[in-house]
Length: 120
Length: 110
View 1 (cartoon, helix red, strand yellow):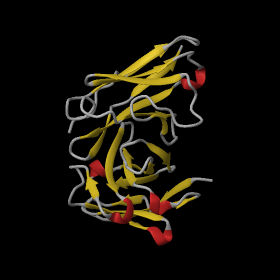
View 2 (tube, chains in turn red, orange):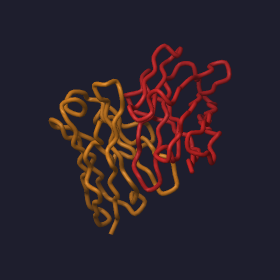
View 3 (tube, chains in turn brown, blue):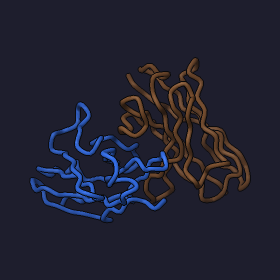
View 4 (cartoon, one colour):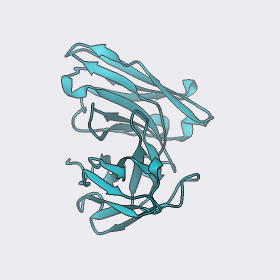
């Protein structure tokens, strides 16, 4: 079935780095925009980044721009988020989500279960 | 960019209809018919309920409907059921080529 599975979360010290992965299955990964969304403990959802089909376009939330890098490997059906210079405000559950309809703004119709990043 | 504004909580009795509002600006909700709504139960991933203001993905109950007027989008849940108790988030495309979410609304089924 259509599925996204995140991994790579964990405990990291302030200023450290972490690389999240998202493994896709059950659909043609290369045909979809992908996004990262995060949710701090007890807080709401926050969009982090998107990457277009063929990695042609990316964009980031102001709070992570210059520190986070989104990438994808279509041969491996995988999405990544390289996170550098981490701070306490980056502590959150990180979800990968699929954009429907050939974009990232027509709704996010498939979500992973999330991976937890704790900066402390 | 500030989050879209949602009421912190709403409540209703089984069988009733409730509406959750989502207020943005002319740079997001007001300028694009690209509002989506998500349901999130505790400890679970969000689930897409509505996209492009009023369209429903397959498999979503027709009890959920969306609309928009000016800078405010709305989600209406009719025939409220106990299983609808969850957190609800709106999301809009914004002119900075980003997505902006609302702060979330906790729905309590009385």
